[in-house]
Length: 70
Image 1 (tube, rainbow, N blue to C red):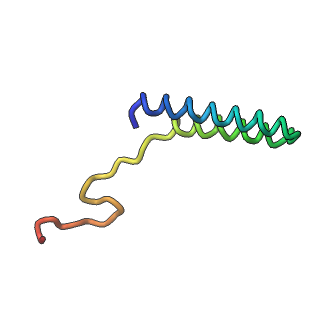
Image 2 (image 1 turned 90 degrees about the vertical axis):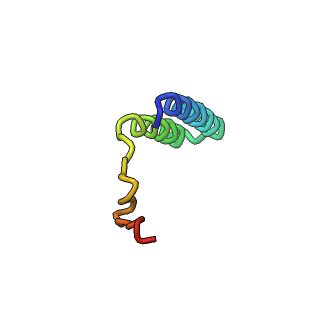
């Protein structure tokens, strides 16, 4: 995934997690607001840490396709 898309997606996740944590705080759910904030940060961390899976075009899904037979 290109860096520009990761940055945009990271910003979006931070905004949504911050709004959701604040809303949970307004409702009086003190523990849940920390869970929401942690999950938002964890999603961003995982997106940047783990690389994308790159497959060969012919063996996508573990199935070898013979395009010459068609």
